[in-house]
Image (tube, rainbow, N blue to C red):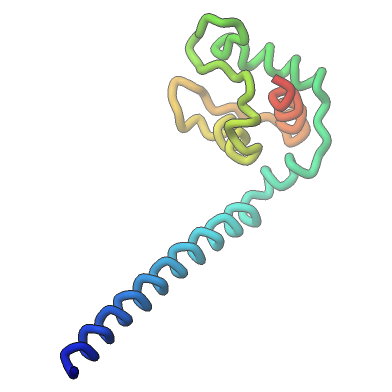
Length: 124
């Protein structure tokens, strides 16, 4: 009987530990999302603005269209049709300004220009 109690307690301890680890991972994930949201004033400002599609189109044609063709054939960069359905606006902002995926260069538009570009990209 004592052996069953010890085995039962060991199983219960593993279950509690597993639940605690899961809760910790989820909490850290939420904290990371929150931190990213409050720690990026550029993205916050961009997302607070209303973008102009026509200005976004002009920005796209000048800065992006050379690599991101909207036709069936690919240039250097991937097609951006439906990009707003595949990527969050924050992810698109980070992608555009970071230059983390060569050969895409860093591009530092003003907050309004970025809002305009996001507005255009959301219509693709």
